[in-house]
Length: 118
Length: 113
Image (cartoon, rainbow over all chains, first blue to last red; front, side, top):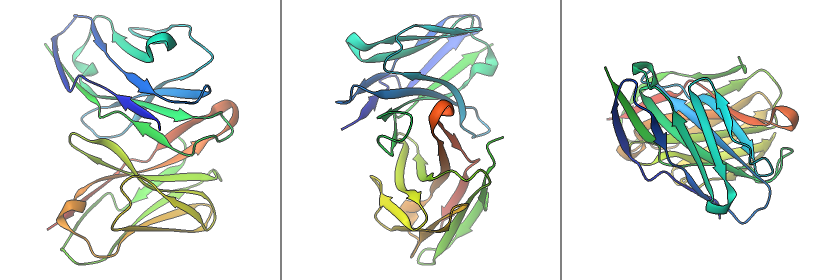
């Protein structure tokens, strides 16, 4: 069965600090997708990134970067030089199977609440 | 904009009353989902649909039913609301192929008093 663990419930940092949010997943499939979503205080779920199991390249988007390591079943998210606007709950999620269907389900971790203080 | 809307956005209801939440999409996606979000639990799947009249249970389906009579609408019903069903409910659609991914509605905040 698929499972996602976000061990950090809450993290508090001061602006401009770097912060890494951990995500560990479990799956028996060789084909799967991993996602990160951001939920700001306004409540909507904002898609950040999708990564498939065959692409282990790390990705950088501005101040955001993601480190995917199949050997440790981890998909960690780093924010460089954090800003107050980064304050949100961040969710890691896993979907098994390929892009045409596979598992019908997207399974979420419990989320990490990040607070960036000025 | 993925064209997914939820209604109502907020609702307060009394224990024991029936409640129906609506999810509407405009892009003809086959897969639709209902999740609930509670502190300390993240998002948990209630029910999902893989086509008109085709639905299945998620991990927290007790006390909920769903219906999908049209591709564009996925309804979630609480037959007799309880205080434990106070939550934020999110609907989602799944896009397949090159744009594979899940898009979420804005959520419905339901309070059962």
